[in-house]
Length: 328
Image 1 (tube, rainbow, N blue to C red):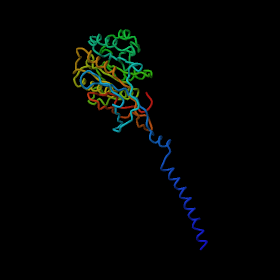
Image 2 (image 1 turned 135 degrees about the vertical axis):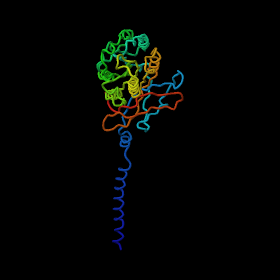
Image 3 (image 1 turned 45 degrees about the horizontal axis):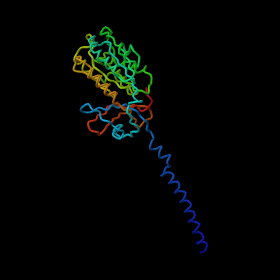
Image 4 (image 1 turned 90 degrees about the vertical axis):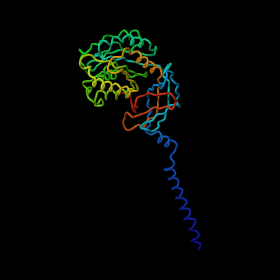
């Protein structure tokens, strides 16, 4: 009897000892420490920046939008907004390049007084460059400069159809490839017919144009915003209603993809492009730098993103994809 009584505490001690060890093991597995928990919650999240333009839905008064008024969704899932900075004051730096299609009709020169005024009215913090698209490249007549009068003087007559039509998107890509990385905004105004015989510009499907696709991808990876004003081209290639429709659709696509806008009035030249230029100037004055946390993958990629607000009479325009990775 005594031996049996002495064995009971021994068995209890063994049970308690193994139970304690097992308990500690389970606690370690089930309850991670603070560092592990933080690593799990932030796993795969990468900060991504977008330039967002604020526009009123009606009227001309642009609402003031705060960080708490902005919502970001990546592939339909809410993302965290970490920063919302108005691009004004010491953050107002802008590099703006004006690209004119050299195949444009000579009548485009009738719009030069409006373009000159647009250039000269830009803030002192804006550097303006001027170039002409031809043969898939850009003939720069003025590098980026804050001397706006000098930039305005760089305008010249387009050469017309004699140059020969090539892809305006090849020229756009050429410019972006050579553009140095900058902390300032990088935005482009294209004045072109959008006709692209090389990359499917005569096709019924603008998405079949590999040069347009490449330009859109590079623009979004590099954070470029592209505006486009339709201007008819010279010669036979610049004519044709269907050709014009699909050319304008291409301009729509690249502007929407990058957070810009496309402007045109039917199939002809507008009497004055000044209203378009005024709208672009208003956009440039009401832009914000948005930073949000995106869910990254194993490789850098473009991820669909939507920027929204519930503020009344307020629209937000941004690129349709955020580049989760290094710039291009």
